[in-house]
Amino acid sequence: MFASRGLLRSSRRLVGGISSATRTYVNLSKPSTSVAVLELDRAPVNSLSKEMADAVSAAIKEAEGDDKVQALVLKSSNPKIFSAGLDITEMNNPEVERLEDFWRSIQDLFLTLYGSRLSTVAAIEGHSPAGGCLLAMSCDYRVMTEGENFKIGLNETKLGIAAPYWLKDLFVKTIGNREAELGLGLGKLYSPSEALSVNLIDEVVKNEDVLEVAMKEAETWAKIPPKGRVASKVMLRSEMMDELREKKELDVGWFRDFIMEEGTQKGIDAYLKSLGGKK
Ligand SMILES: CC/C=C\C/C=C\C/C=C\C/C=C/C(=O)SCCNC(=O)CCNC(=O)[C@H](O)C(C)(C)COP(=O)(O)OP(=O)(O)OC[C@H]1O[C@@H](n2cnc3c(N)ncnc32)[C@H](O)[C@@H]1OP(=O)(O)O
Image: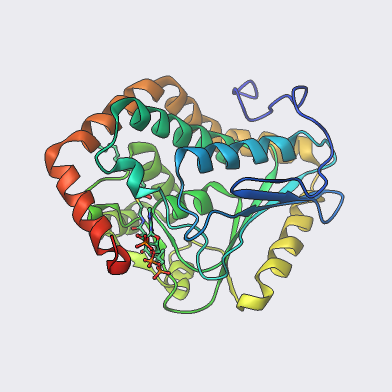
């Protein structure tokens, strides 16, 4: 069971020590010995393009490469938007090869974050729809800023698309089957208080407190002896991860075929044009 690939990832390839490493789209810092902070920083809305997904995966691996680091806080540089989810332009009239590579990067990001040996705490600052909710649900603990206009959930059906099966599974694991049926079917976006009531998030805090609360939570997790903590995480998460690893290329094909359909393209195009009213 503990042999699940990825979860107890070797750090040999990675440079140890993090000193406010800053790179395109993400900022990685280490404010305490055992906790790293990964800031999403892709204006305007932290949407996940292929390059953004790759940058987040690389930063998680870099944090894992420091043996002293036991926990990671995932935050946003934008106090009103954690992440707007997948970069919709990647799915709008795409080149097939790029679309497939984009999806592999999203799969890898999920496997990297969900399977991290680090305890992960999402400091959800503001909106977190679809792929943003995926990032949050892949963490071990979720703190969200208050403000009933902020929303989190899986709104894919509203774009005319469906969440992939593994995101559906993660949603069911997080909030239970009945609520997932309602949430997925209606493409429901939950306010922080609604999200708390269905266990989509663990805590709602004032905007100015979110990082402090997330850091405190991360320090708590970091104090748990890693051997048992990681073994427990493997037990809870490896089945889902192993299934996706086995079906990775099948899943790429499902995604490609679904997105390339004419009807899907029409829906994505219309949704994209409605955003900000500018495109
Ligand atoms: C059988 C099934 C097989 C396979 C599965 C198939 C597909 C499923 C795949 C994966 C699941 C995950 C899917 C997703 O994540 S799709 C993305 C969903 N996200 C959203 O719906 C959020 C959209 N954005 C918003 O609602 C707002 O932008 C937000 C509330 C976040 C912020 O509002 P604000 O008023 O502050 O900003 P805007 O003016 O709306 O936007 C600014 C700027 O950014 C552009 N934008 C916004 N979101 C995105 C995005 N996700 N991707 C790309 N671009 C985005 C927006 O158009 C504006 O651009 P511009 O007009 O140029 O200024």
